[in-house]
Image 1 (cartoon, one colour):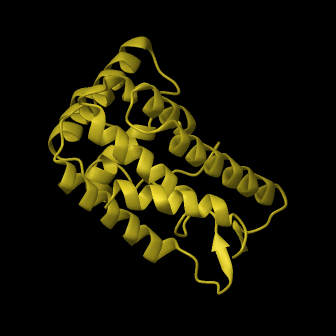
Image 2 (image 1 turned 90 degrees about the vertical axis):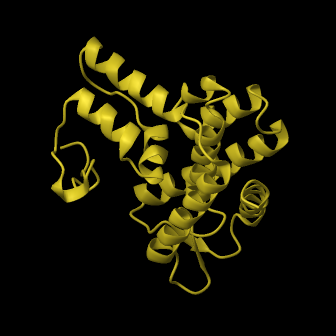
Length: 198
């Protein structure tokens, strides 16, 4: 096993099939999937399989991400999911900053990228090309969705905090740091979050 998989996170939850045909996956994504599942689809990529399977997956992903959405509903659903995650997974240690889950952390950067892809891909389908955050933000610049200064700040914040998590993982340390670390980066993230989700 390369990594642990939470099999509860699949179409139709615990009652759904572990494996489904591509047409069933396509139908589920178009008809029944929740916004958070479309957020996950932003990050999804094909890692193994034959060409027809890869084409079917790519087509479903592209079509679903390019679907027009109501901007206010999308904002509300993304923010609500982020708040649920933060309440469940956020920092509980006084004086510590959880790099991934706390306000201004990595997950805020990821959720903002996912929101922007879901909100603008129907007008700018090139936003669906990449599934990693850095190239998503670079594409947001290229497509005129986000100002370069803001996107570059978010990229710097993301890579700096991600590198710290990797370093701490190698040392078998928790992914939390003293509260006064990453102050500038966290402020960039908070400003961007407040601007886009106002």
